[in-house]
Image (cartoon, rainbow, N blue to C red; front, top):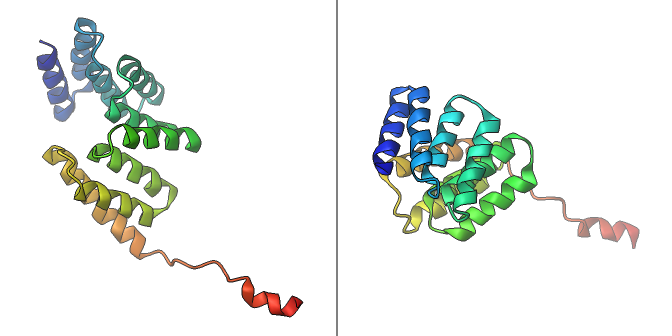
Length: 175
């Protein structure tokens, strides 16, 4: 019953019916409150509805049930970044990668963190590392990672990287 409710909830989201999806995810959470997936599903609905506070509450509930639920931790990191809490965002994303270093979704979200901050080269590095490893992700996440990688590569081509000036050249003037 629980997985059926989750499947129906995600089907409603794909159809563009977040209200029906939320009902399904709430029923799933009520039927098995000790499992984090329903709370994560509710967070996805709130993301769709652009309700940032509810997204954070739902993700924190999912992590309260299972503190090692990497997808919730990765999305929570991005939500903190949206609130300009860069330190908390990086902590959550680092922990997500530490908990599950081969999780491609965690790599995608960490790359999104750097991308939003304008560090496109770092974003490319993280995505390439995530795609090269044995990630075991489903085809949707792999396609999303590849598309994001090409977007990050395009942005990184437009950046001029400069080395900081070498102060040793100036030392002979003061000697």
